[in-house]
Image 1 (spheres, one colour):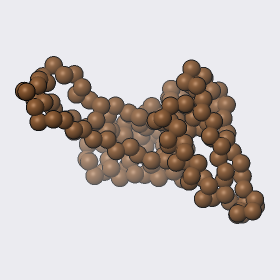
Image 2: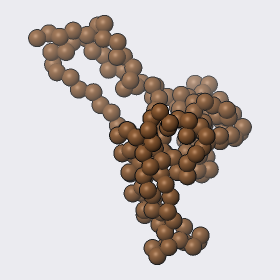
Image 3: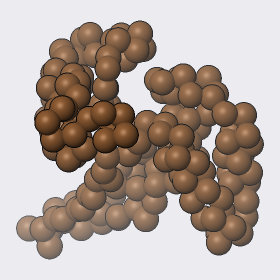
Length: 171
């Protein structure tokens, strides 16, 4: 930022737009705090849910923060939904055919170590090209009372396994 003429005495003002709900506003506040450290002063613009997605699709924002979530803890879902050319949730319109090929390659790689290395390469390229940078990863957990029986925690996602047909209360 200093090479661009910004510093403690000359700061860049931007509007940070996000959906007006806590799960969007809270990360936007974190982002604004991080931007402050590099001489960027962010002003939060909470946007009503009914107009948020049309605003994102039109790219009608200076800085837009959106929450990207997936149902599975697998890179395929995230990459194919958000980063490949023409994906529905590729809001910025980013397109890199070589990266798409790497995404396809990691998807079919059977060796876990080789796949992990490909995923790290993809994430490195996305970071270097500043494509929808990740602000933070959520950590989720599950807890229940000892009288809840038959509940199975899924190993690949917090969000799977919520059909409670095998769960009962022993109380």
